[in-house]
Amino acid sequence: MKTTPEQHPAAILPPEDKSHVQALRHVFVERVLSVTQTTMDIKKLLARAFPDVSNEVNGDLRAALDQLDDLKCCLDSFRPLNPAQLENLQRSFDVSYTFESNRIEGNTLTLQETHMVIAKGMTIKGKTLDEHLEARNHQAAIEYIRDLAAQDVSLNERLVNQLHAIVLGGIRPLDAGVYRKVQVEITGARHVPPPPYLVAKRMEDVFHFYDEYASAFHPALLAADMHEKIVTVHPWIDGNGRTSRLVMNLILLQHGYPIARISGDDDARLAYYAALEQAQVDGNAEPFRHLVVDYIKQSFFEYLAAVVVNAGEDMETKGAYFYERIAPFM
Figure (cartoon, helix red, strand yellow):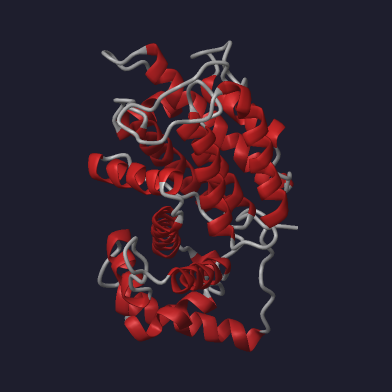
C-alpha cells in the first residue's frame, strides 16, 4: 500500500524520545525561527543542507534521487499533519500548480486571478470563457488525482482518459477523454506525433511500460517517464501537457510526494520543451528526468518550509529526522 500525506501513520515515540525531539525543535526555533518567520529563508537553509547535484549537463541523477529520498524522510517525520495545516498547504499548492500548468499552455490568468476563479467562482473581465474553464477544470482534476492517490487506485489507460475528460470538460466536450482522429503538428517543435491510427497502440505500449516498471523504478523517474511518454504520443487533440503533468503528479502523490509544479514563465517553459524534445527526437531522456527531479526537490523545499514555519504545539514531538538532518547547517 502506497502512502499519501493524509495516510502516513504517526510515529509512536517513548517519552525520552519525545523530549529529544522537543529539544531539537527548541534549538531550531531559537536559531532559525526567532530570526525569520519566512519560508524563503527556510528554503535557503534547506538548499545548504541539500546542495544542487543535478542539472542537464553533468548532474549526478543517482545523488539527486537520494536527496529526494532524504527529503521525503524529513517530511514523513512531521506526518500526519494537522488537518487544517494540510488543507491550507494543499489549497496553496493547488492554485499555484493550476496557474503554472495552464500558463505553460498559454492561459493568461494571473496567479491571483486563478485563485479568484477557483476559490471565489469569480469571472475576470477581459479573460475568455475557456481560460476560466481551464482553471476550474484543472482544480477539479487535482481533486480527482488526490482522491485516486488516497484510494491507492492503480494507474491505467481508462483512468487517464477520465482525467483528460475533466481537463477538457466544457471546452471541447466532443474531444474530452477521446483519442484524436486527426494528424497533429506541434508548432516550432522537431517532434512529430504518431498518426491517429497508431495512437491507441502507442498508448497501450505506454501502459505496458508502466505495468512492467511501476515497482522497479524510483517514483520520481517513473513520474517523469510517464509524463514524457504520454505527451510524446500526444494522444488527444488538446490538453496533452496538462493531462501528462497530472499523471506525473498522481504517481508522486501515490508515493507520498508533494505535487511538483513545472514553472510556466518564458525561460522555464523553453527549458521544459527543450528537455522534452531531447527525449522525443534524440532519444535522450536524461535532461527531462533531471528537470523533473529538480522541480520535485523544489516542491519538497516549499512544502517543508511551510510545515516548519507554521508548526503549532501539536507538532512539538514531530520532525525528529528533519531537525537532526538540518542541525549542522543552522
